[in-house]
Image (cartoon, rainbow over all chains, first blue to last red; front, side, top):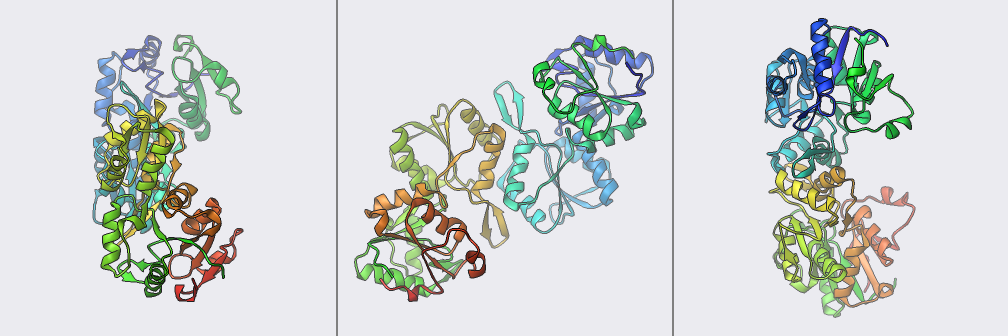
Length: 254
Length: 254
């Protein structure tokens, strides 16, 4: 095993499963904290603010402050500011993305937009989609917090942001830039916060198609834990393999 | 030229452009009426009832009764009844599709559905999309009135039903059966109403990708008129050519 100086951690399937805490995940975070190794939780949930995510984790007994959280919404807002400056942004989405865009000093506008951002919006309307299409057709940059096709709920799998984003994508013929896992953008943003170099950073997650691919695309080492979505059998046939695999995060030595 | 016993006619770009009537189109319909040759207008507009479509045409001086109209909504409802019987149907859409489904004696249901139908719905909500996804995941047949990606309006190109349908398609991974042009389903339904055989029926339209392809896929002859969307240059490079082309419908002899 290698000693890493910074850790990027997935949440669902790695730290908890639905409402059930994964104890070995919690113990890993405890060990990171004791050794003063920085860590950031990286989540494709665009609807919550980072303080809300931290609060949820604290409620599960997981050591987490707001500075330990990078949501796709935060990564999206940071990316816009770094790439385009303080431009007017048309936002389709919930509190998390609106808050993140404003927190970066960007202007949320319904009249004029250099950038269109879509995040999960359970208050979606035809008018919101229509405005997004018109801005994209007029040449606005088209971003989407994440491409998740479906989100697990107690009712079953409901539409995720990737499927809502497809309305504008299909209608305009313009492909968005996705920010969340498995894209590298969110990883790069999280590493900036972490303050570590790629060669000394490890990404840990349970989902090959989001967590592990994101690490691979960002050019950092990956640790796969089989406590969530992906199975050993599915993972074994993938062309690009995670650097490390464990059944439980208790097996991982810092 | 060949003498056809039944005519299928496109509307926008063939009979009118926006609010402007195409006179040669109107004269063709007049000639059809005088010769007692049956004709049916075939439209991908799923939001209006056939009497509303006929009324609009009458207002433009185009001879049209309700029996001369086949909307995608009517074709969809007829197809469901013929294929599955009087099953419970979950409907996402406006008045046209709801009215058509009820007119065929089918049961519109939010609790139980053997078939999910999507038509353009400018009152779309996350809950409607969520229900559609859940029914499709439970095994309901997935239909969509038409795959139009965008609809022209005074504000610009707004999301069409094909782009709204993509939410459920992308989220569930299930491809819908589209009913409208360029699919053959609507053509077959219109020919049933017309009462003519394929060999004696002609489809007239201005849009290669919807009208002409629909005729080709249904195995009937096609007449392309260059008064709308498609240009001669675009059409010339298509692999499958329309049987006839004219610059004005005045050139066409019955």
